[in-house]
Amino acid sequence: MMIRIMYSDGNFDMVRPNMLDDLLEKQKVTSFKRSSGWAVVGRDQIRSKGGSHYRGSEKRMT
View 1 (tube, rainbow, N blue to C red):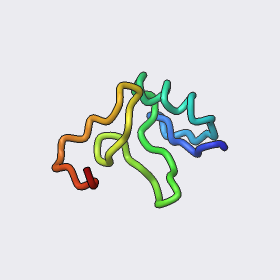
View 2 (view 1 turned 90 degrees about the horizontal axis):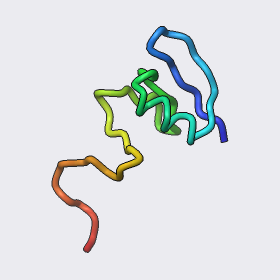
View 3 (view 1 turned 45 degrees about the vertical axis):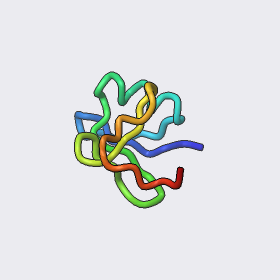
View 4 (view 1 turned 90 degrees about the vertical axis):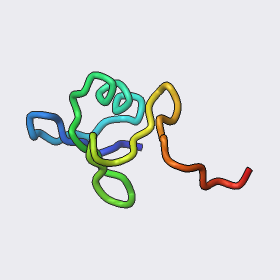
């Protein structure tokens, strides 16, 4: 599966999920396309290699 991304310079590309992880870590991507729409780095919740950094209240069943 390929993911559409927008680089910091405004150019678009299609990358594999593992490449997206690397680009996010290097802060080279400003947004990427999800099934629900565009996710914007710094605005939307984005997972990272180190696990979830979500700091909100837990809503899952325990």
